[in-house]
Image (cartoon, rainbow, N blue to C red; front, side, top):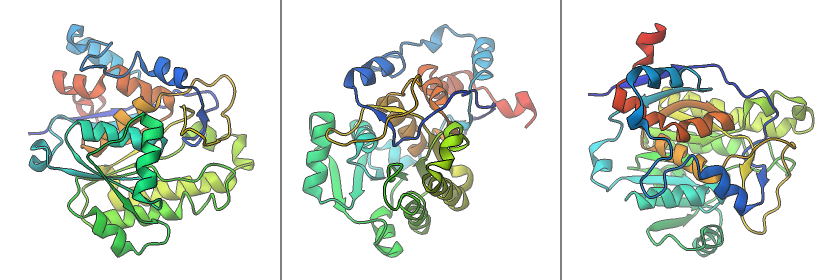
Length: 315
C-alpha cells in the first residue's frame, strides 16, 4: 500500500540561476558542495531519526518544490535487482554519475549516445576515474534514429532518464534541446516505459534577461519539458538545476552568473535516480530545492513519518 506525500510550496530561489549546461570546473567545488548533503557510505549528515513527526512537517513546509513521494514505489522486478534503466547521455557529466549510482544499486543500466561504445567508456573513465563494467553502451543518435529504433532500446525498462541537451549558445540549441527530447519522450511512451526523468533549466534563469540572449536555448528546454509532461504527466520527474559544479574534462562550457553557488553533480544524480525508481515525481526547480531534497532526506522522512500533504493542505 502506497503512502503518497504531496508538497506544494513556492520556489524560493530569488537569485539568478544558470542552466544544467553551465558548470563551475572545480572538482574541489564538487566535493565541498555535496559533502553535507549526500549519503556517504550509507550515512546521512542530517539524521531524520532525531525528528518528531511535527518537526518533520515543519521542515517540509519550507521547501521550494512541488513533488510527490511514494513509500512503496518500485515494481517487483526492480526490487529483485533485475530492473533496467535507460540513460540517454549516460556517459556525460551528469549521466555518468547517474549510471554509476544506478549500477551500484544493482540495476541494469543502458547508456545511449551517438558516440561509440568505446568513446562512451573512455569518457566515463575520464569523469569518474574508472569505468562502470556493468553498463551497456549503445551507439544511437536520438535526433536522427526512428522512434521505433529508440523505443526498441527502451523496451522493458523501469525508467528512461534524459541527460541529453545542447549547451547554451551552441548551434541548433533549440532543436538540440527541444525536438530531440520530445522524440525521446515519445519513444519511451510508445515502449511502455512507466517513469521518465528529464533535466531541464532553472525557471529563475529562463525568466531572466538571459532569455534575450539565449532565447532559442530556453525555448528548446521549455518544449522538451512540455513534451515530457504531455507524454508522462504526473509519472515524470523534471529536475531544473542551476549551476552545476564541475564538468567533463576538456569540455568548455559558459560560466554561470557570479555569486550563484553551484550544486554538486552527485546531488543531482541522487535526485535523478530517486525519480527513475519512482520515489519522486513532479518538478524540483532550482539548486536550493535539489539540495533540500538530498540534505533533508525527504524521501526517507516522508516514508518514516507517513506524512500526507494532501490532508495538511486540503489538496
